[in-house]
Length: 78
Image 1: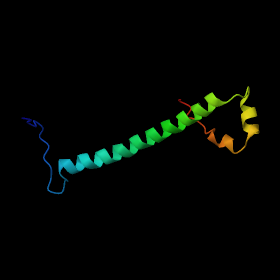
Image 2 (image 1 turned 135 degrees about the horizontal axis):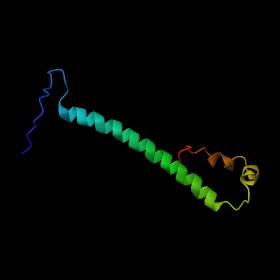
Image 3 (image 1 turned 180 degrees about the vertical axis):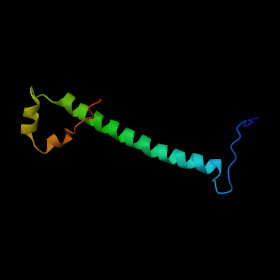
């Protein structure tokens, strides 16, 4: 049995806790989806780079301009 020792009382205008948790969870799910998409993009870049046989990055860019679109900038903190 959980007992809340807090003195906070919800007003009649405050949505129920379950609704607030649901809203928070939906927001966090969007944030997690963004992190996952960014990580997948980085993984694709790394996979392409592992397949590359060029000695210099410029060679990759000259080899096929259409294929160079995978070279997206990574965050500086990465």
